[in-house]
Image (cartoon, rainbow, N blue to C red; front, side):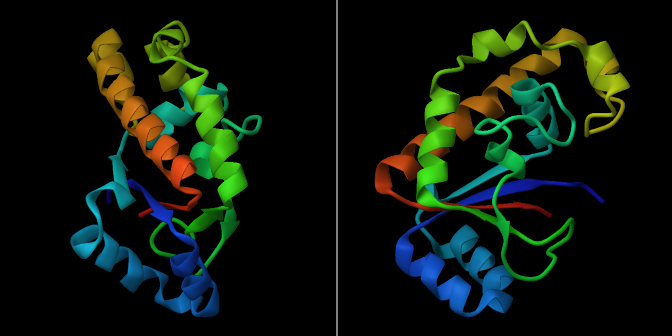
Length: 165
């Protein structure tokens, strides 16, 4: 089973509604993915762990605000596959966005080492040595999409719902 990352920008009314009834978070996510505004949902796919590792140098943690971009937030609702979704508050979204904007993808290239990714067991497992340096292009594309998604959410004053499903 694949582990895919999704990010949903949440306007205040949506966040209030989910907090009032966290059990409906899965249905709400399905609705936003299919019927919501295109800019509300970002599906990062399998690139999430590689991007996190580039940002933090840590497979599972790291320092805020960059570590919050994928693994941050407070749990909300039921387990949807690999734990419950988590919510970043609007001020945290602004902090993450500013940190991402201050870190160009070119700077991440210097941090990319297929051997280190393999040793750290970064998901998806086993592709880093096989694909080599060219897989960085895939990670950079995902990073740019994540930067833009956070930037838009921060500009709109939205919270962010993060999940691995």
